[in-house]
Amino acid sequence: MRLTIAEAVVSRFPGTVLGVAVARGIDNSGPDSEVTALLREAQTGIPARFAGRPVAEHPNFAVWREAYRSFGAKPKEHRSSIESLVRRVLKGEAIPHVNRLVDIYNAVSLQTLLPAGAEDLDAMEGDLELTIASGEEPPVRLLGEPEARPPRAGEVIYRDRAGVVCRRWNWKEADRTKLTERTRNAVAVVEGLPPIEPSAVAAAIEAIALWTRTRCGGAVTTAILGRLRPSVDL
Image (cartoon, rainbow, N blue to C red):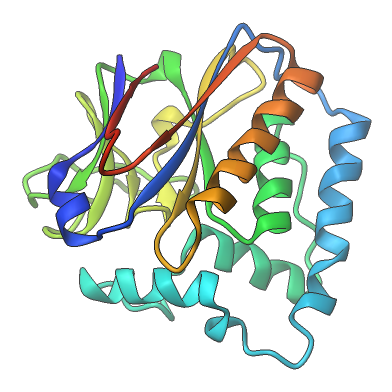
């Protein structure tokens, strides 16, 4: 099993960087006080960072808004995962506990203002690819949605042999591959586009890896993908 950035993505979005952490043999069950504290601390710092500043104008969000527009997604209707997370916090919502690894990547995402997510490797089929949708992919049921819908041709998606894993790059993931408390093997990803520096992506994925090793156990390895290294074994 491999994760690959398709050449079509790199050509269309030069400077694409993925930080990847592969975690095997983890314990993802039950809440963890240290992880909960990390998530709450990350939330607490958000209002001051955006005081008097329009959320949409932050460079870490603006770059994803432009990417979304380029494949026909309206940013007001479809926001990057990190912009959605920050807006929830600014509305006064507490980011809920889901499971240890989800809480970890949400906390690091808020700390770094970078999109982060993860999938259950045992729920996937074959290789995982970041690519451009052809419009012929089968419908996919996303988290929180009652019906399955296919991606639009031209949008950036993650997909495996069974179908779409995440739509509109980092907008919303498939229910099929979500992390649960039973997850034992997972892949976490942090994403960057210029002007986001690769070093920022690398620091974020290393933080996720460190917290995963410390609070979930198992063996965790990391890699940075881009034009010069487009794939890694999972």
